[in-house]
Length: 187
Ligand SMILES: Cc1cc2nc3c(=O)[nH]c(=O)nc-3n(C[C@H](O)[C@H](O)[C@H](O)COP(=O)(O)O)c2cc1C
Image 1 (cartoon, helix red, strand yellow):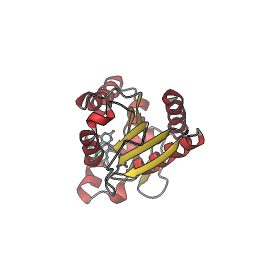
Image 2 (cartoon, protein in one colour):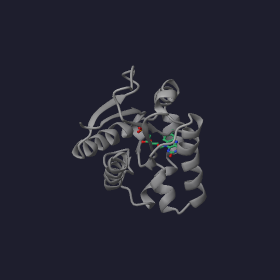
Image 3 (tube, helix red, strand yellow):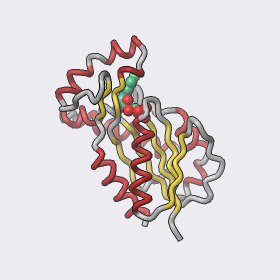
Image 4 (cartoon, helix red, strand yellow):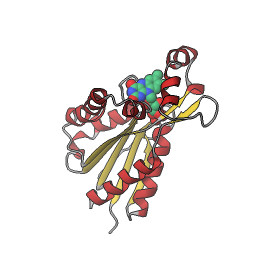
């Protein structure tokens, strides 16, 4: 029987949605049955049918979106008996990697992933920080002004606007490779 997987995600700017869909496509290709849930739009009522639960969140000011965290809290006990994986979307990750900010990279891994897993007593089979988007069109004026200083860093790291005000720092091959390895680990 096909292994069943659930992806539950929360997004503010859309990156975690399209990343979740790509992960789902890869897992499907590896023979898993997948359900993808936008936790802002749909409440998961039961995780009993799933063997693997993947939780994804966008990052903002060092914080997860609220809904996937609520999901972790709500299903903490059941998740303890399942295979769990966690990913976050961080548009800053590619910049700090390019800038070789080793300490920040380590701190983010701890803060975004390891501390979150520990908070809910989870032992994920895989955790990863994936890229994200800078969508200046979706920011309010204050944010747009504050984050304008990021533009030179984004450009220096080799990212070009894919449309006015929109940069995508995701490495789709890295996303697909992570999903494929996750399928292997999940067995
Ligand atoms: C106001 C603001 C704050 C952000 N703070 C962080 C941050 O603390 N760490 C980080 O890695 N990325 C940060 N980012 C970049 C986001 O990770 C990126 O926009 C990502 O795509 C968010 O996921 P989402 O598109 O699914 O909402 C920030 C972006 C904005 C607009």
